[in-house]
Image (cartoon, rainbow, N blue to C red; front, side):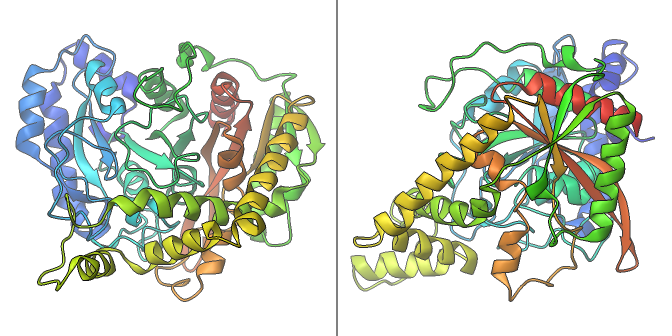
Length: 474
């Protein structure tokens, strides 16, 4: 087993015992990237020399001392490019500061190493919307890795990173984790500071880890969470030791099966894997109960009103004046705006800006945006009622396994429906995790399937407890 396939706790033990050095880990990561990134396309850029300089100063006595971590390319790291997978920022923007999550990881001794590919401005579920290159699924080249954190999931599952950071607005950590075969965790909204994350939809975005195991996710979460006065949505909540939940028995724990998540549109092979996962939970002594989340069917439509509306406002800042792509030889200011944005943004980003601007426009605001906000409240209330009877919810992460690259290129609506099981947790602000549950054989490939667990707000401990018990039993 390579160093990059070792758990964080194993690497910590080896580092403390001086069996390996931080420089060894950096070199191992660089070697893996140089050997496989040409085929997989997980990384957009990396700076081995800068990482080695950090490795020389690393304090291995710290919780993450000397461990390199991949970073999704919409999270600012001082002196590194932050392209968001877009021509708008590629080659024209270098981060002048560290995001709060990067500051916290550095304080724990970690080394940010490499910029990971993503759907442009996090808008997509396949990483095919990146303007800067294609990312392959490491388990099945020729298939999508999921998105928008596809580069992060590919790097972790493909052995190009020990662990990585992603962002999740409608499933962008959990869905690629499920399709690539690794663990992806979205914390409670407000648990992790968004300062330094390039905003897509501010009421939905949340940073989280992609890892090889549930225990690794718990360890990273310890060093990502906490109040940040620079983020107005940051929660003033204490941060427990999430690793304390690892290894706890789930006997008697009430786990809900939402009937709306087992629908006719789910791939039958995927459903079979999830049903086996549910049987595993039952064998561990969990108390399984059918529950109802009746407004689930409104989730996708609600999301694709609210998220584009927020995106249209957040992306207005990219005008080519202060930074970002600037059109050449524009005749006047209006032409400068129009041409810079037309040249800098890709088709999916333009589609969502137009949709968001439309639903916020005079005469349509009440019919679309206000109605969507009401639907969001109903979805949140569904979960609140469900958690009166259960401690955790189990369901598929994605209704289908990874499809072939280009298969949904001309069908954006079907691509949007790929997030049907992940979107509700974002709309309700709940913590959720995807854990590998097995594989299905389709298209001459063994394609990973993820099982999703959702818990109450701020109850990541129960989430990790159940996820680890399932992972161990598998």
